[in-house]
Length: 423
Ligand SMILES: Cc1ncc(COP(=O)(O)O)c(C=O)c1O
Image (cartoon, rainbow, N blue to C red; front, side, top):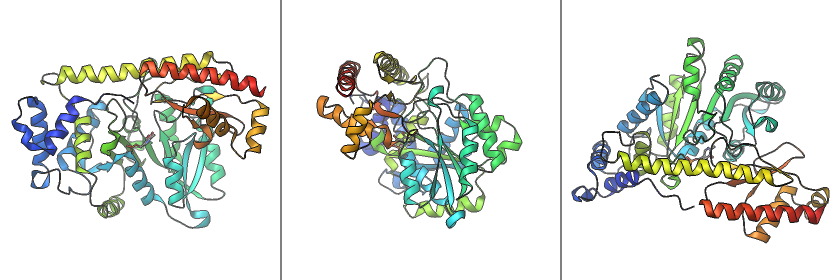
């Protein structure tokens, strides 16, 4: 998508990968120090060695330090941190350990609809039961606890709902949850004895001025001992998103809170079957959680690059929302965070009929027509789940501004023509 990598991250990884570069004067000293610290913690001082299954100790310590700073001083324990192969691997692993039972006692996993399809796929692979709760589109995709309650009570008729997944900021819906909402969700999980999974991979991608990222861990701890000594939580972060976008390195971490010691032992045993997450990905995670500090040589460049990526994304989020909302028959909620627009499209009956004839979901038909006519590829809302009778598509805001403008203009022209043709 043309997004430039953060130089410091690539320098540290390059130095870790090929330590002979330590003698190269074009690499800054702080990157060299960072790389040698990582290497000192690696077996044989090499990225090519296996690490412990939970991940390199000094990187887990840096993750714990990052979480503590992010959460205003609330401590994090490196023993509760697991470095993972992207967030996906952490999510799939914890789900695997949580699923059990047969028939009506089979584990139910509550997921938002629309959802990021990793969840439905992992649930299906584990033969667990997917329990849908719907986000409120009329209210900027907010999470409503009454809807959680409805979904949970209904699901208890046919399974044993044990896990509640939250994606914040949301993919594909882009909403950022308010602190009040998070408190309500935690209270609900406490009341109902649910294990919380907080997917927070977009924690650095918040654009709306009136929104702020609140981690579930922080809110949980601030709600008092009744909550922070009882509610089980796993939260996830990744090198793939934020301002780094280094998804190919497959770096990530999971922090667990209140995981029973025996379960943690089983988790480590299970993870050890896969030996360890890629050590280069662990090193990338280290840079994400431990970027240059104000007194260090690389700081100014790092901040410049980071701000450039984030302000560009914020601009594109606003632009996308504005243009979509100018198009009759498209309605787009504010892109408060993450990297996507998920506009609602109103598809005329005649087009719905045509899609039926072609045995396609109406939004799939729309997206295929868009692809055929413009070459633009977006994902139909039916891939993420949506309320019956509503249609959407998901589009990333990652392309460069000029490309994005052209793309939005083409979508606009296509949509107007499509509506005209099928009205
Ligand atoms: C909400 C959400 N969770 C998890 C992931 C997976 O990220 P990773 O590359 O860290 O496995 C993604 C990727 O798009 C995502 O959007």
